[in-house]
Image (cartoon, rainbow, N blue to C red; front, side, top):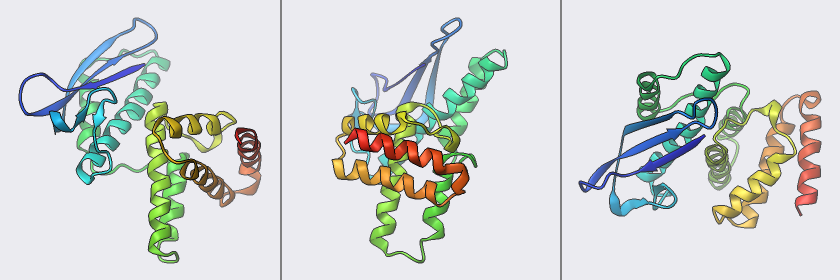
Length: 213
């Protein structure tokens, strides 16, 4: 599936447009005008996102773009698996809802759900700099999901996680230190869960991490 975000040619402050092309079945195409707005000089045409994704208002837009890729892909795949049609109208409603939602809880089996719980359960016990560092790791995984266009579920983390995350981190020009500390943080999250459930996953990450180095 291919997501293309772009701005129209006319106007100064523009709504971000989105086209989606499915990669199976009839190879359907869908086009949307989202309620997200940005000026042309703040838009990176090649990366299809705001130029400065760390400035607060553009960070929010970029997060929504990542959520669109994850949630819409999940929605379309479920419709296909159930043998149901995908209508422009229903998909347009889905896109609009994702764009205007302030916050949505993560699925309980997702890595982000456990990361969120871990960080906020320790907020009062850790110093501010540690909390901020944890939030950096959290946002990296959010962006990584957008890169993969899928939700990272705890029971589906496997040996490809490390390699894919390193590729993503290098592509986004994160420091090697940030990349590997993020991986170690994921290991910490898993260790805080049921030992029987996560032991094999942790071992997979440790072995993959060893060979990645």
